[in-house]
Image 1 (tube, rainbow, N blue to C red):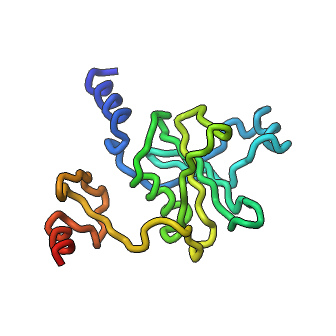
Image 2 (cartoon, rainbow, N blue to C red):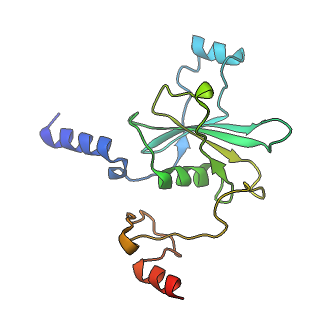
Image 3 (cartoon, helix red, strand yellow):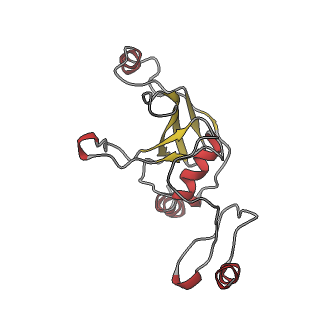
Length: 177
């Protein structure tokens, strides 16, 4: 590997945005014919309904998970970077949810009680309401997206800037009325 190739590899590990965010394509379940799959079929672990991959992420999708009578049905997204490094990029997780489930479906990331903690890999989980007409009883009620550094805040530019994205001047006008 040349010095340039090594530098690019390290840069991609440090910043997944160094890779373009390409289209999703179907992935395969690793070891689908192995002993681990036989265990999954016996019910010891869930088998995903679909696997999707792009240049940055691999996502296992479990559709219409029942959560008891008091909760609506949900989709479970198990997300990891292709290079297996840690992530926590809110915009990427939002985009994954939008791309694979829908832009109007709400989802949450759970920070569980320690007694239910599952932390064995750089893997992240979103639980997304299956019905886009159902919303959680918490969260913001209106949309606001911005980039810039209004009043010492810091927000990076969007890769794909939304049409309604505000800049510092727009926010200043909105606040001043």
